[in-house]
Amino acid sequence: MKKADLVALGKILRSQGRDGHLKLRLNEKGFPGSDCATIYLRRADGFEAFAVESLTLDRNVYFLKLKGIDTLAGADALAGLDVFVAEADFRRLERGLFYDFEVIGCRVVTRDGAEVGEVAGILPAGGQVLLVVRRGEGEVYVPFTETICVKVDPEAKEILIDPPNGLLELNEI
Image 1 (tube, rainbow, N blue to C red):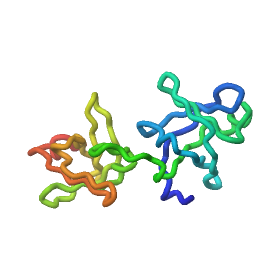
Image 2: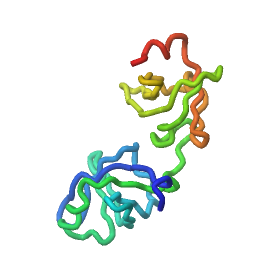
Image 3: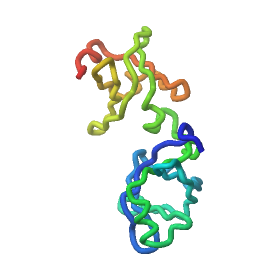
Image 4: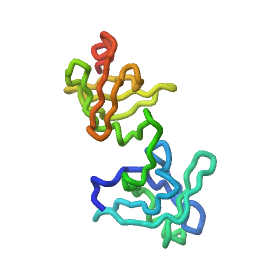
């Protein structure tokens, strides 16, 4: 599997129990789907594939069990590794909803064709989500709402915005 086909899902925080379970911290809003059978762990020499035996959610924490990792020592050896999943394993979201990885890296342009910049990150802001758009040497925050982000095209890696007057100048950092 090539890195270009993989999405960073999260990180293994530590082992959990004696039978090889792993505690995960996820980057995305959830695990790709119940049909995800393989994850990839990034090691110094590349990616290693593991079959998923089980995934459980307990009190807002994900616990992962990988086939072949059946001991505390085996699980401890994986602590701190980044977890990747094939992009194709993510289920399609409802219309108008996007995974972070689909939006980060998108080119942002205004309706009149002016280049704003590239989405460098996502910032949750009390119920609203802001796009952190790298613009020259700085950044601007763009509310990720339908009224401002009028067209989001993850395949083309482009977001068309219709910002209110002064928005792009107001929040330049």
